[in-house]
Image (cartoon, rainbow, N blue to C red):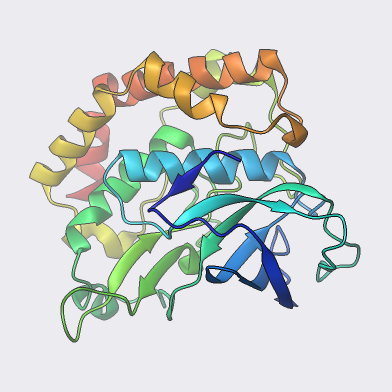
Length: 274
């Protein structure tokens, strides 16, 4: 099975540890390459949540953000993996992230001052706006998911933490819903492609959003192209209910939305974050 981020590639699930009552009922498992967080087919958020997770985390890396190492792994028919809300993971391709020690951000500015890569915060806002990621900080302010800003103890500098942008299972949607359903028709709509809302911006981020870093992130976004989108979308397993039409719509949306944000939203983002 193709597809990994960060050079980490487990091939076998060895032990189920627990399932957590998150949107996707993420599971903690041991593998032949160490411990990881598994999002499997049949989860309560639907198989398209795996599409969003894989695309979102890949594109976070493409934009220069630190993420968990991630890979595709096959759930075998005899793997006994139970969801927290009932039911069992379906056999087939799943997403797994390498477990790191640390914790979700508590929401304070003081915590962010202890982060070694705080300059990446501007890139979080650009990423979430590009992908319309409604599950970190919704533009309305009605959803503030601090846990999706992970502070890892695996920092390079002693006494510091490392920020990780995690959990992209609910990006790209027309509206926030518990079950993720990607629709080719909606992805082709101007309402999504030219959505002027700014996603991912917590008010506590303001002091850490450097304009030079914002300019750099938007330049990286402007350079995203159809060839990159095609290569990324081609990795999506068909078992995740990804039709040919949906693949094309995803490619077209990612490229068109990247240009829209890079070309027309720079001023709006800059005014908000400074």
